[in-house]
Each structure stands twice: as structure tokens, then as C-alpha cells.
Length: 344
Ligand code: IMP
Ligand code: ZN
Image (tube, rainbow, N blue to C red; front, side, top):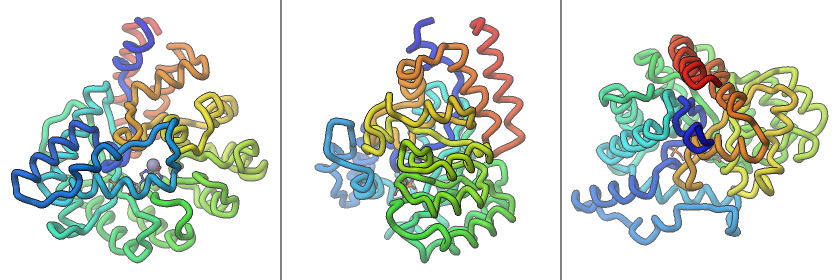
């Protein structure tokens, strides 16, 4: 089996994907047509072409945050949000993902409340028939500090109602804005209510915040770029990460395309992998970065010389880091079957 086929066919686990960053071009065009038919004025006509960031342009991580408004225009009514959720889950499914923890920030729009936003995604995940197992992580945006209590309350309410769908809470958004300490009490409350926590951590150098985050001991962190001393971190926080064994969600293309990392070969994957820090590959925003989870596995194998047997075991180990514990065995059995069938 060649590498492309292996990466597409092996069952994969996606643990770091933002809904509105994951909209593909074809999904965006369908949403645009749908909104036009409804007669909802949509300004995104011209802008869909701008919903992308590549390694060759001059856009950086901070520019990414203005791009999300393009997707947000298209998911501002419940029906188009449901379509976006459904189409995105099917794209992950077609790419060979068997389990996903999709994440999204509940948003109020002229057409729905925060609660209706959440309800729409949850019901789409629960009512449509998928072969992929969909779960939801509720996002808190660092740029909306006043929403944190309200979103935490919703997350707890929906976790109690649908514990097998709403599995976690996370902190994301522009890392240059806001302070982790502001969000800590709400995240602690969510955790005490049974939600698992993942934090975008170390996207930019900020040793104090990274220390606070790691000491909170989230169930996972995202990115972890500026932790190793060679990448803007220092020995102390690097050792803290290594000892904590907190799994890190790594998004290779996202880091390269936002210029957080100069190239694939300079990505901190290799430091984490060699130090046996638990890692899981993810796409982050597959729409903006024009990638897929199978492409991330292929790039990882090619860049770091990971052989097929080790590559598929990266996917297998991801089962240990998922937030819904009752699905671990089913998923790992499925990946083990694939390993045995293909003598990997
Ligand atoms: P949404 O939560 O479904 O609306 O997905 C888009 C949101 O995810 C953005 O507005 C950001 O808050 C967050 N996000 C997406 N990518 C990144 C990233 O690379 N770093 C931090 N936050 C991100
Ligand atoms: Zn992210």
C-alpha cells in the first residue's frame, strides 16, 4: 500500500478541528447558495477566495482571526449552521476519520442565540446518521472575556443533558489577547462538572502563561509551539511538559501556514516525538489551510521519516487521549484490526 492510500484508509482520530475554520470551499459555496435562496443578504461573495492562508503568503497567525468572520457570515442562521456541521463531519468521514471532537464557539447572531447555536450543532451530531463518531468541545474565545461565565454555564448544561456528545471545553482565539487567569475559575468549574479541558497553549512565547496552563493540568493542550527552548520556550517549561505527559494536539500545516513554524522540517513534532511526549495530529482549520487529516499524516511521515507501522500507531495512541472514555475500546479495536489486516 502506498503512503497516500495508507494515510487515507487508516482509521484516524481528529481531536483538534474548529468548525468555522474547517469549512471547505465547496461547503462554503453550498452555504452561500442556500443563504442567497433564503434571501439573506450575504457579503461573502467576494471573500470566499480570501478564506485561505498558505506558507507562501505574508499572512501570520494574527491575520487568521479576521478570516473567521467570512465563515461566520455563512453560519449565522440555524439551518446553514446545521448544514455546515453536517457537511464538515461528512468530509472528515470521507477522509477516513472514525472519531472527531469538533470544537466551536457558541455565537449570538441576528438569527439565533448562543443556546440555539449550541443546540443546532448538538442536534445535527445526534440526529444525522454518520459512520464517524461526532463529539463536541465547546470553545471559549479569549477575545470575548465577558462571555466566559455564560458559555461555561451552557457547556455544563449541555454536558449534563448529552454527556456522550458534549465532552469538553477549550480556550482558543487570539493568543495575544486576554489572560489565562481570567478564564481559570470558569474552566475549573467546568472540569468539576465533568467536562474535559484542552487549552491552546504556547502559540506565541509567553512563559508565564504556559507555566500557569501546564500547572492547571488540562487533559490536553493544543500546539505547544513555544515550549521547547529552541522554539521560544525554556528548559523549565519544557521539563514541566515532559514530566506532566499532557498530550499535545499538533497541527503541522496550521503552524507552517501561520508562520508560527518556519517549515515542516523545523516543526517541534520531532522534539516532542523524541522525548516521548504524547502527541496527536490534527488539522486545526482544514478549510483555511487547505489540508485534511490524511494529508497531515502523510506530511508527518515524509518529513520525519515515520514508517507505516509507527504512523498507524500514532493514530492508535490517539485513542488514549480522547475525551469520551466509553469509545476508547471500540476505536482502538478498529485501528488494531486495520493494523492486523495490513500486517503493519
Ligand atoms: P468556531 O469556534 O467554530 O467559530 O471556529 C473559529 C474560531 O476558532 C476562531 O474564531 C478562533 O477563536 C478559534 N481558532 C481557530 N484556529 C485557531 C488557532 O490557530 N488559534 C487560536 N484559535 C483558533
Ligand atoms: Zn486551534
